[in-house]
Amino acid sequence: MTTLPDARAALGTKRRLLLGISGGPGSGKSTFAARLARELADAGVAAVVVPMDGFHLPQAVLAERGLAAVKGAPSTFDRAAFESLLARLRDTSETVTAPAYSRELHAVVPEAISVPPESQIVLVEGNYLGYWPGVRRLLDEIWKLEVPWDVARERLIARRIATGSGPEAAREWVDRVDAANAMLVADDFATRVITGSDSQGVS
Image 1 (cartoon, rainbow, N blue to C red):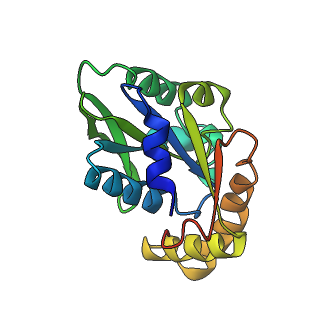
Image 2: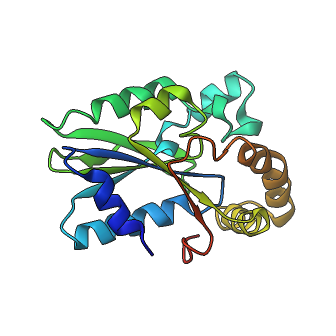
Image 3: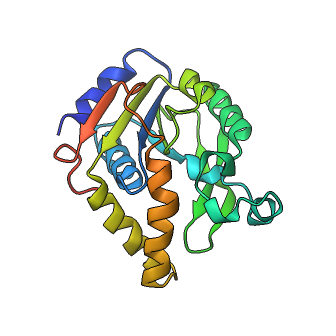
């Protein structure tokens, strides 16, 4: 694994690095980002993970807009609020709070994450970091995790079953919604593409 020295090299002399961890649904972004944050901490670099999933629109809003059946698509996120947070994360003079998403509650938890002034690297994790131009401009680098779709599909089905879906409903959702979303996550804007062999252990 070369991700730890690469992250430290990307930090360089910056006061704070915003490092995007992108990839399709089920590519292992959350696990990878959490592991890298731990490795950075062990190496004396203060890092915090901020997931894009904290910007899911509320379920009531999705229902009102007819988007509940495609939750997870780009239109089901509050992109403006996400971009606003990324801009505020450039300010290292005060603690910035960010929301998180609970898969158990299927809902956003406000102000669940604190990014204190001493945080040197913020690992911003999400599907559409390269897809949205405004988000791209606010990140210093974007690393994309790439795993075969059949591997990601099995992970996603298992995740949905673990959080309450029946097997058939889980497969239908993954093949209809997650597969379409995965097609939007391209390599074009990635600073680095990390293949399955380099990200083994993520889920």
